[in-house]
Image (cartoon, rainbow, N blue to C red; front, side, top):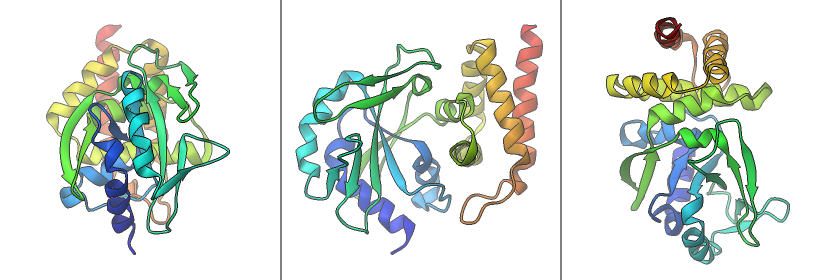
Length: 237
């Protein structure tokens, strides 16, 4: 079974939650779903991240029993749902709170579905809705997710994976998305802008990793985005 098959099967299995209003697919699978036909060639991680806005937590929680036939919550981390079949991917639930600062993080306590709420996810806004595997899936705006990956201060393997997700998003954005990147970036505090530029510099130097998107042919696009953002900083100085 290919990675794409497992991804589509996971989306179908998570339909009860994914079709709740305002729930988003976030993280590493978004570039795969933005490819024509959801080609899923940009394999960075082996899980599906589901973003749950805090205001719809109760509605999502009511739908969780419908997923128990295909998944079960991890005893160690209840926000991680482990598949009962190797044909599915792991599902990770994360919280979205638009009111939070990008540097904030907190735990939304709950007996069944506690959520780690990452402040950087406040940069996300709802993007287009697609139908895949018979399921209506709402994706975030590529611009917001791109900046979320670049504003986060992560290092090591996790940091490199996030940068490769940013690369996959950069491969999928168009002129209107870049204009939105400009606007979101301009609204960030100076320390977050610095983090974005630093991460773009790191991304421009990354080497190829087996089974992951190759950054080398896209270095010019990464540098072009960096120069574009530097112009915004120059204009604001």
